Image 1 (cartoon, rainbow, N blue to C red):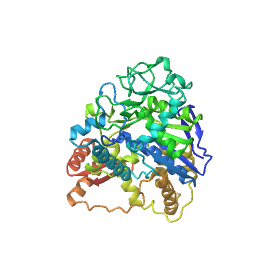
Image 2 (tube, rainbow, N blue to C red):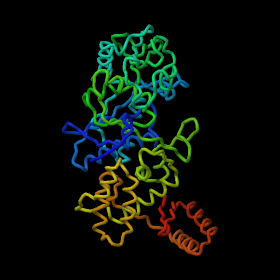
Image 3 (spheres, rainbow, N blue to C red):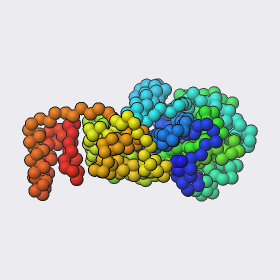
Image 4 (cartoon, rainbow, N blue to C red):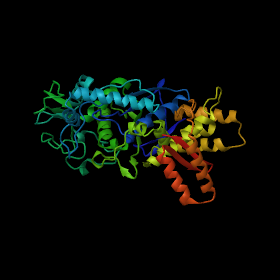
Length: 452
């Protein structure tokens, strides 16, 4: 069975479900902009968990929310991001939400990420949040503040901090993702469940506590309880959600269910690009469409992410994407992904069950490719089985472009230069070839190339 690292217990635990299906809740996108490749790494994580369970015969019920309201503004930017983008593009904020939600689903499809069973929208779950907030007030876990907003009483939940290790007494007022204008709460670490509208006139709703809008954390508790019940087998999100979002979500949910509702909290690590954190302010945000515009198969991104453990911070580069693109084409050209009959490959299964060790699976395929003791049929069986989880479309027919004679001659000249260890000439020819539109990847077996 699949064993995966649980952030709360700080241990690798087996995925066990008492129901007929494994339930997974994955925190989805905030749809005020396109998801960048770092965001997509988290969504791939839930897909890998699902596919690994499915090849073992399990049925999976995956729910992924769409945050189109209620996202807490960061201290440095007190304006709501959805409303800010709507103003920037001069269209209705709900049009903004639907636009970027559609783009999100397009990106998932390009990455071969299977659709969730449900994609509940926060804006369509307001009544669910009202009911949950009312229950929390009834149980003395929440209260109406002097400013008309409703707050969760953090001190009422004894085990707060179990996921992140943060202690209430050490938290400073206005910590990241919480509002800074909350003068109506009783304790500095309390957080808003329902925020009084004040001067805000867009994306607000009536409620038992007056006109307002939901806090960010309450939406996931409300939707997960509604669609998956009181017990959830796996909750997935990026490491940045561990605190305060998941910590607050756990407090809200467990306070109502009186259970440890989530069995496994699974978090994916950060993704750097070219050695730097992706941020709009530094111009270092990379989208999936950027890969496509450069002529790369979008599954080259999936390939790169699979070569790194989900719990390890990784540094994505254009060179690694180019290398992945070339290897994908070589594997498809080999025909190894087209086996009609295959059995479960034990080394692949063992690697996946060991906390989703996809780098080991990728390494195995590279070894299998070069193993002269295996027949093509055996290689195809292993590749095809692994691709059920890797989802790299290794069985796709590949149309190899015809290389112009002049470029073929330059490639041959460069191979001669490399054999003679004439590196300056090799580099000169590489630049000339790349300027002509070729993508070149040097391997131990020689040059691999592709036309942009």
